[in-house]
Length: 332
Image 1 (cartoon, rainbow, N blue to C red):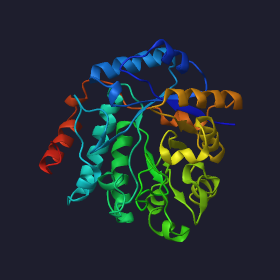
Image 2: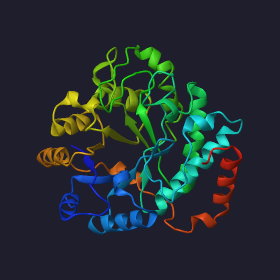
Image 3: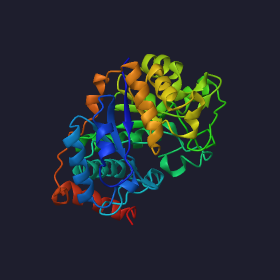
């Protein structure tokens, strides 16, 4: 079986226990959170220390903009994506934001941010809300496509989330199990459209911890119907599939952390995330060791390709992007 674990750490520096876990070949990535971040320099040094243990690990963060922005002190405070959509030159601004985000994230030694959000803003889901570009699927796809273009220009792979769309289900999958009662045809015609339209630009997809009972009784991230038949088969997507955090309440339908990560990999995920719960990460790791998993080769596509220079603010592109966002009153 192919698959691997993305884990996290507790503080701003590696402990001996962290290093021991990171040495395990079944661990393929590490995601950082606000608690791991003190300054750009400290994050760079943390990434260097991680690479000294495992040069091949994928290093990730959630740096969408708006309220989901882990890197704050010393970084540009990007606007929420919904705020970009309200401008006449929204596509230009979205591209600038994608480039700025990817440049800053890679400059501290991280490979990727899990972005952009392709969920639609149906004015129903509080957890999605302003994280979404739009409620209209065609315009959402155009704006997200511009954001991805900026990411790619900076050398970062793009991850669309949360397939097939989290914007209709009202519950927050961090604390509950959301349900979307619509038919597959309704979802295809609306929320799946950004994933369909951007399929060739996306390097990875993250499925939603949402149950769509008219399609499958399992949440999308544990569903072969969604991941194999529809995402891979119908949409022809051949990029990486990351699970959403398997510690979230929406994932608990699959059992303990070992059962959850096995269910995600069996469904078609290439990497399972287990965050904010070290005991659960250890259970998941033990499950992967028992299953004798091998990492999916396609994960290598997610490595950052941008320069990790610290003088990126001297680049003309930087000045252009900052000036455009300030002119649109999108920077604090």
